[in-house]
Amino acid sequence: MKNVAVLGATGSIGASTLDVIARHPQRFRASVLSANADVAGLVALCQRFRPDVAIIAEPSQHAALREGLARSQLSTQALAGPQALVDVVASSVCDTVVAAIVGAAGLGSTLAAAQSGKRLLLANKESIVVAGALLMAAIRESGAELLPIDSEHNAIFQCLPAPAIGAAATPSVRQIVLTASGGPFRGWSRTQLATVTPEQACAHPKWRMGRKISVDSATLMNKGLEVIEARWLFDAAPEAIKVLVHPQSIVHSLVSYTDGSTLAQLGNPDMRSALAFGLGWPERVDAGVADLDLAAIGRLDFEAPDEDTFPCLRLARQALQRGPLATTVLNAANEVAVSAFLQGQLGFLDIPAVLEATLAQVNEGDTTSVSALLALDQTARRTANAQLKRFEA
Ligand code: NAD
Ligand code: MG
Image (cartoon, rainbow, N blue to C red):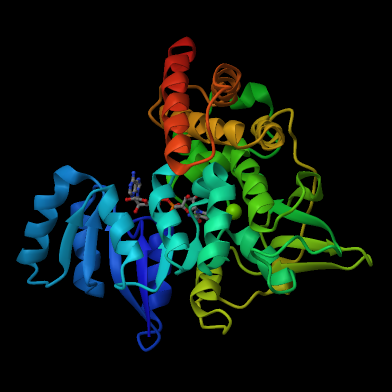
């Protein structure tokens, strides 16, 4: 029996994880559930999954969580605050951690899973964008098992020879090709993009996801973050990581070898496949996902990404070339800009403008420890917030 901590249980990845866990009561158990501030949502999940521990990240909601669990007559322990996440992840209450918190807020708990030698199912891409070197070093030192959950990286993991993670890059790999759906605005002009709304940006054609990653998919920043993620996960040279737009989202990514062979992983666009892969690995378990019916799909299309209309992908590549300082600043500024866009305070086309201005201003800082990276993240957030005033919608 695997005891699984589902961090970000009330989110999109959290729901998909719990769906897979519920299909295998003899194999997997949700021993820890966490949420940011939604006590009612977390208590409802506790009623169904009866975990040992429930954690609400927002400290002011501790009493509400305790009362909610007591009213439901559950013996689940109620904890609160970011440090509780770290402590519980490192404890024996779980052997597997699904890192599905959104944003750099997931860094502490993701690193704790890596440092304590757990099986880490990594969906929280922002933590590896910010602290890739430290996270991979922690995995190597502790012997933790990292299974990528981002569908592209999960596909690459499946197409690479073992061990795909933590070893030096495979010399026979010529390139890694990340596919991208292109998001809801594929083919649109900058004139059309100037007036798009958060609702339009969040209406992704192929994936149902949280609002932050949905906007990242619409700007192509999601693919930029994924290029950085791939660099760390697979020890890949940035030039060897390509992006290919594939609107049907059936081919989840590809790996090309020196002999001219290209391996791809295909499936329906449903995150439960990657989560079932990570939970069951090295065995395969039922994910509740329908068989792929290529005859019904009929055709698969591919095209190059449009980096002029969607400059975030280029900004992410440039940040990767500059190093950890730039990728941390990029991520923080992006979190601020996306949040402002979602609140109607920033235009869609101003998102990359805020990133560029913040990257130009924050160019000093230590990146050699987690505390230094978090300090840099805060500086970049303050700078990006100050930039917002220039662009106010
Ligand atoms: P979501 O917004 O649906 O859920 C986020 C979860 O994190 C919620 O449970 C929320 O309560 C929690 N949370 C938010 N802020 C927090 C904080 N400050 N402290 C603690 N918890 C907090 O997001 P999602 O779509 O499930 O994505 C989660 C992560 O997985 C993101 O990093 C995203 O990039 C990645 N991811 C998602 C998908 C997808 O299909 N949804 C695919 C690939 C990768
Ligand atoms: Mg992805």
